[in-house]
Length: 49
Image (cartoon, rainbow, N blue to C red):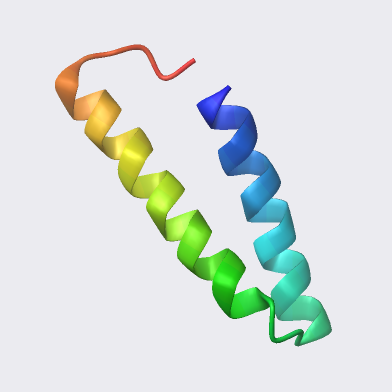
């Protein structure tokens, strides 16, 4: 589920850059947070899915 959320945020983040929407900054922050969470789970040895 975490991977699905990260993928959705990634797509919305790219759309934010394409449309130059001010919401893109917020999506960028969410994408960075999701990537950090995935990395922490990988480092701890837990399953990402």
